[in-house]
Image (cartoon, rainbow, N blue to C red; front, side, top):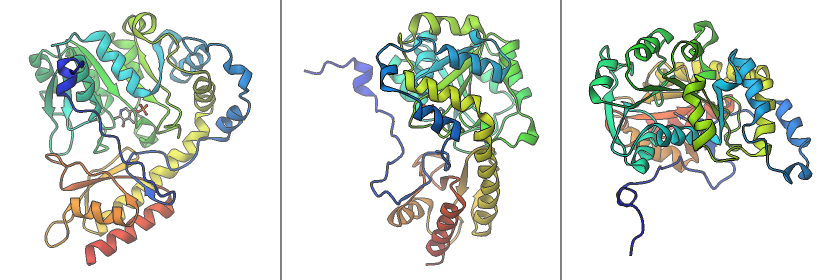
Length: 360
Ligand SMILES: *Cc1c(COP(=O)(O)O)cnc(C)c1O
């Protein structure tokens, strides 16, 4: 006897990036920040006492919401803290979409969206991105004609690192008949000279929800803390009805608050990542890879054409050398590798290994 709901029986779960067993493996496959969180976070962790865990945590993570409201020049009512971005995505879908309704995604993108849609019994409308990974001109018309209740756009885009402008997103928000979710998991790595800032959209529209996470920019993937930005009318059903009563734990609240309050500390790592991103792009190009220009902490690199091994084989040969990158065996991606920007030393080891693999 199988007790699962039929849609759960039919679906496949999310495949996380591999976790290497060797401690000295070079891990460039899940877009983690190669540098540790700032000293302010380490201090906050040391100051946590076991007695602090006797009581339930503040249900809405008030301290974090205040710091986040300051940081984004919004109101605490515009902030919803969650147990990782993945919880926020699940909350959005279960709060706003009925089973059978349609979720639209730009294709390709984060492979968790279809998994969450399956859990809720929603349909997926996939709108292909253009060759340079930008959204097509008629993106919003296609969203509306698909009948989608929710649309998910990753910006900077994963897995390419392509950045859509705030104006492009505004045009979509203005005309889309559903809720536009802008997944900004990698926003901290954008070149500051581009002055990208989409938070005005939250002030202007009540159908825009922005996802931010402490996992990538703030080096806290193991902590599980993220948050959403949106109009208070949009967030309120999640804040007061559908969220687990204590969805973020005490320690994660304390550390996430310390991390965001010291964003300037984290920004040191962002700048280092940008510098290495530029070097990696240049050197990968010198090896014959075609790289999509990235505003993120990873690079999507198309394997050299001609005699050299294919991307899947390069991925395997790197793995044999304990260097992990991400390979997606799916249309438009199976000739490419997604490489997380690591420390200068890790990147140099990757480049040396690629040099050997391509010349063997
Ligand atoms: C990493 C990531 C998230 C959120 O990750 P959490 O660790 O759950 O906060 C969301 N969207 C994309 C595209 C990501 O890569």
